[in-house]
Image 1 (cartoon, rainbow, N blue to C red):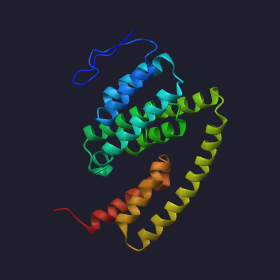
Image 2: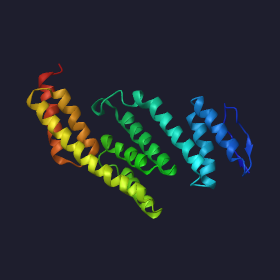
Image 3: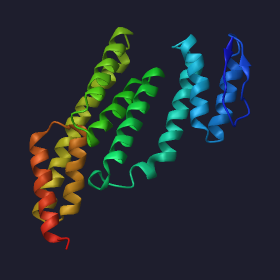
Image 4: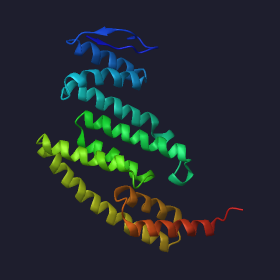
Amino acid sequence: MIMMSLSGCQSSNRIYGQSDKVLILSDAIEHLKAGEFYEARQLVESVLDQTPYDADAQKVMAEIIDAEIATQKDALEAKVKEELTEGEENQMVSTWLERSHGFLRAGQYEQALLAAERVFIYQPDNLEASKLIDQIKEKARAEGKEASLILQRRYDEEIELRVQRYWEQALTWKEEGKLGAAKMAVQKILLLDPKDKKAVVLYEQIKQGIQEQYPTS
């Protein structure tokens, strides 16, 4: 038997049997519609704990994650990295790590990878994110998800093209004195390639230029 004790919701203290997958997922969807993401996630995870590759549960989990991202996006990204306190930065990191784990559990490897790489915007040397990325890739390979591997190769190629385009934009805008736009372009480079040392140097140069243009006093 599966006992879910979710305070403040319709399924509080409801006891589910091993064969109640349909009921559990139905309740999870109701919580999702009500914006009760934590409760919805708990229910779906109870199914995935029993059958990790259940397609229906994976689909609902993906919907929960998408809804969380859509709901919290503005609040999470209202500030640029430089404006975040240490606590806010840690919250961002925890949020994207949790999302990545959720996508991984749902078997959505590309989304899991993207979410894990978001961590590097805030903490370029985050060891947990690095290990998670390795885990995502290893699991995809172990399951023989050839389509996912092909998708990853295409993604890597797309990353390279994007980085090249952002470099062109950043250098052009810096030359034209459009430092705010140049800064955003470099931020995109560092999102896609956090270890790009040249981009880090350029980013610091642009930040210095902005400070000289708009000194705080």
